[in-house]
Image (tube, rainbow, N blue to C red):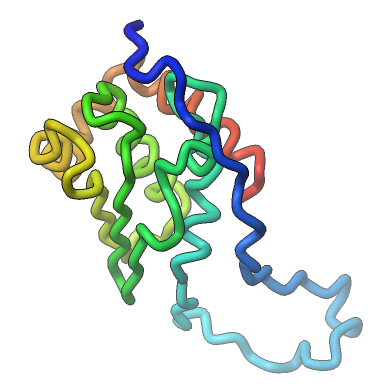
Length: 171
């Protein structure tokens, strides 16, 4: 495999984002004074930028043993979230990065696995950060191309390896 950036700059991970934790279930009905409050199963819990960042920050770079956060490929300000849409912009480490589509696919798969199906996810390279920006964006946001990529066992294996670290963080 060709290495597109043999000496990337490594940054220290950001401090924890203060992600809200979900309340734990009481041991029994009687352990919680508010246990008699009904929970509406149709309530939509909002998801914010920091929660999305926590889901993708620990994805491993396909070329290096570093996370996308450590390489500054992703950051919280590059994410926008609305009621039913998530947009992630990422910055390849070099303008000719041949791993950009694989990085974007890893981000997409992580979000597909983690978010409720009501969310539409769009993944883009930061404008001006890649010499084939338009082609990469087209590949990453075309349902048929993504589906075809996810039918390739070698590609799926590589994506799974990139996601192992993120999944071990419990995000």
